[in-house]
Amino acid sequence: MNRQFVLFLFAGGVAACVNFFSRMLLSLWLVYGAAIVVAYVLGMITAFALNRALVFRRVSHSMRHQVFWFTVVNLAAVLQTLAISLLLAEWLFPRMGLTWHPETVAHAFGVAVPVVTSFIGHKYLSFKSH
Image 1 (tube, rainbow, N blue to C red):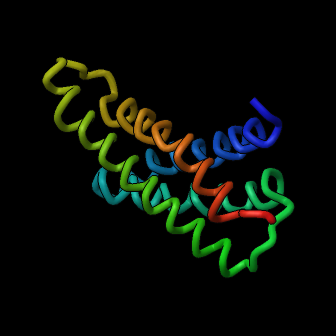
Image 2: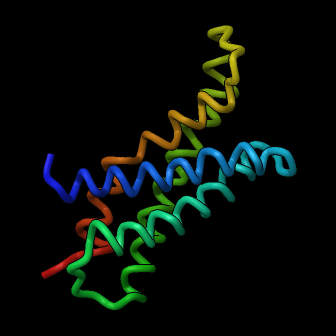
């Protein structure tokens, strides 16, 4: 693993924690699916700031370009996160008899799934350098 990917994992880990723990708090007021989406946006804002500051510092495109592609890549990732989380929590885990915090466990898997696809998207689209 190169340094850039390690920093990406660190930034993503911090953003994932923001996402993961804010979803638990948001679930006090919102339904599960809506809480996942709002938490993902909070994590996305954190991820953009950390990636821009730590991971992809040599960027050749405008901030507008970066924000646009960062949003596109993350829209694809939030669909992955939502699909995996809902599939596990509402379909697979009940069939397996898993009752220990099924929404939390499902969301943890859902957040982890798009790590590699997001790195590739951000490296070559969001924060592309010449």
